[in-house]
Image 1 (cartoon, helix red, strand yellow):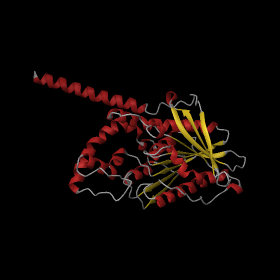
Image 2 (tube, one colour):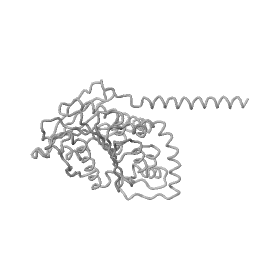
Image 3 (cartoon, helix red, strand yellow):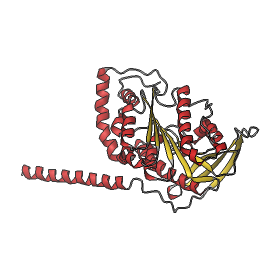
Image 4 (cartoon, one colour):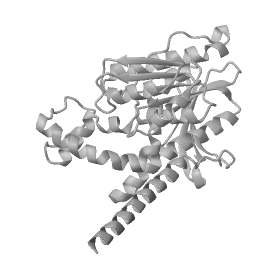
Amino acid sequence: MWKKILKGAGGVLVALVFLAWGIKAYRDAHFFDNYDPRAPLNLAVLETTEVNRESPEKGYTITRFTFDGFQGEKVPTLISMPMKRTGKKLPAVIFLHGIGQNKNFLREITAPFNQTGFAMLCFDQYMQGERKLHGKQSFRARWKAFVQRAAKTVNETRRALDYLSAHPDIDSQRIYLVGASYGAVTGSTVMAKDKRLRAGVLVYGGGDFRKLLHSYANHLGMAAALGLIDGRNLNPEKPPLPKLTASQERKVSVVIGCIIPIVRYFLGAADPIHYASEISPTPVYFQNGKYDVLVPASAGKALQDAAREPKKITWYESDHVGIDLEQTKRVLEDGLKWLLEQDDSFRAPEEKMTNAPPFEINRT
């Protein structure tokens, strides 16, 4: 009798496992399905402001508007354009901000891009800026939103490409992408899926969720959650950071090791490691820090290795981008110089530029 019960239970368990992985396979296959190029953008321009109007060489406009994402969801967006024009259509850069930033970071970095002739666009990713979750949310609700954020960011970037490709002032053959941190993680997938992008810069991104989840920042966060360290003033972007003991590291590694299969089950389809090889033949520039506590060097290398040529790679003797202001300026300048190289063949002799203007950001 017990043998029959155990066999029956075993059969049910096997069936449930197959069902669970069948559901995962179906969900993964359709993870990025919610992009529809035929859907109306329903643009709504809210306001335009002028910056440095008295200095045309440095002047630019910033327009705030919305476009429709999936099922008419409004996506708050900024686009900046140089005031000085040659009469030709402009190249454009889509900037994908980091996990804790919002579209207003464009205001901090746009000037050098505009001074070198680029328009620049950035939208609020889901859960950030004007799209923050309101009120007290359960863990389940926040986790669901975080899973949705990856797909929304990829698909809404493609909708931004729809907008720029039809814009009367933008050259549709000269649309580039710059993704920083989380924006580099999602941006690499955009580059794999949409060949309208001429080239892209992936700033301190990474792939392989197993490696990403084992960042030192995550280890510290888990140690704080387990009560192993005091996490009240813990901020991975404000060093120096506490050092975990060998015993603490072992405990944290065990817990994170148990979490990894769960994350990969629900969010594995968003791992850019699956798509990086498809970036080719679009040129891509990888920038990474050797001592990054948020995106481990191993995760950065995994994404780089998964991508095929043509690619350029620069390793900086640095922590995560944004932590050190001067280092961040250098990274931005290197990225802009590379974009100018990619755009050079489109430029008349008087438009060509070899040096990027300095970035004068006040915060990161």
